[in-house]
Length: 258
Image (cartoon, rainbow, N blue to C red):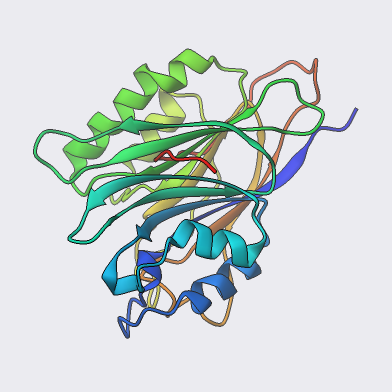
């Protein structure tokens, strides 16, 4: 019996504010996401009721425009009028969503949005983690180790897991820990930052308990101006019920469900 297949994208949308012109233009982000053609989208830096983004609830603005009926959102950072955080948009039903706090001490608030998404033909849900990790190496190592010792370990090696997001993985530490300690699978990650002249592979998608095809950058006319990151998209395959073996996953962050 053939397993379930779907596309996963991750995108730091920078509040829909262009990385070059600093203009609020959600239509550019929408054009990029349409080009991705994903079934599940992990978004970071999503504004909610903030003046700079016209007081929009961006999770609903983008979800409605793209036809994603199932959504989850959790705030990370409070600003004067509202907050911003991580969101997941899905074409498949979301069973549950929770926020995992990954804030280290006095540093900027960080979290992982963990959602359970239904997959046709599967009894067990797909566990999707949307991450936006910290800027320092020590912070990222602590955050990844907390996930490895907690949620990732609790799920077991055969549960289908996808982990993705803006990992700020400057030195590849996150990648090594996920592969060597967590048993995740990866493919070569293209450079994604800054969008107008990509020099660093800060974003990523990883899987466990699943198959991961090539991870690629999304190509669209607006991709270098819509945000300060270029999104990634990957093809993920789930084993049919009763299949044995181990696969790998991609990371996330935030909570709040519609």
